[in-house]
Amino acid sequence: MAINLTGPQKAAILMVVLGSDISSEIFKFLREEEIERLTVEIANLPKINPEEREQVMREFHEIMMAQRFILQGGVDYAKDLLTRSLGAERAGVLIEKLLSQKKPFEFMKKVDPVQLLNTIQGEHPQTIALVLAYLPAERSSVIISQLPPEIQSDVVRRLAIMERGSPEALQRVETILHAKLSSFTTTTRAGEKRIGGIDSVVDMLNQVERDVERTVLEGIGEQDPELAEEIRKRMFTFEDITRLDDRSAQRVLREVDIRELAMALKGASDPAKNMVFKNMPKRAADMLREEIEFLGPVRAKDVEEAQQKVINVIRQLEDSGEIVVSRGGGGKGGERIIT
Image (cartoon, rainbow, N blue to C red; front, side, top):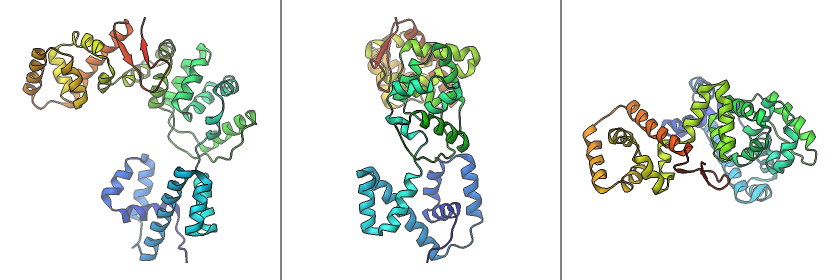
């Protein structure tokens, strides 16, 4: 007989059964309020009896199995296999539960970008930002590139500071846009989740043309200079130095003080270090290795500051057209040359 447990209670039991090591890794993917709620549920759990333990682990296993089957061969394939092992009724419940968790605006991922652009460009910038938050970067970059220049920066700024969409707002926007795109039908259930944010903006801007990127960031800078600078910082990190071609790397290294470079490399990965060493004369590379070893233990803050100075040099040389920076994400041309 099934034991009547709430969703949070099942989650709490699962965390206890999995143990602290695995549970602590899972917590890294949860929001703060989710961790707090789950912790309270765990604290309030009475002794877990064998029947509760078995039921929770069985449901967890079934859900994982259903998700794997869907990924392998789609919904029909998953339903067929689950029906054979669990029966038609249980298979139907599992499939329905998983399908009800589809992401908001899922139907828009198959809509032609031009048609989608024509549908949303007359909407409020906040609505456009909300839609872009749920689209893959390669699709959102196409749309933002085609928006009127006067609203591009406003939309991207709203996307950068966006954190969560309420179920009510998502459902309302989804209903309106779904009606406009009447040739596409879907049934989705929007739930509160983390959306948008600076990472979404970085992914998108990394795939647009350089002039669009510059226009957007300049527009954001007029309204929120700190936000614009934070976006610029994340668009190229020190580890991305490995994306420079050898000629560009050598040009950058000529502008960087060896002591600053040694400090920056203290916290760098082996690929980044190798990229630097191979683009320096042997004698200079040997001196740099000695400088790094001489530094000994250093503060993380000092390493970050040194790395930022190197990044600033790269940005300056890119803006002046002296070097090429390969942009990730498959934007037009892959590499963009500043003229």
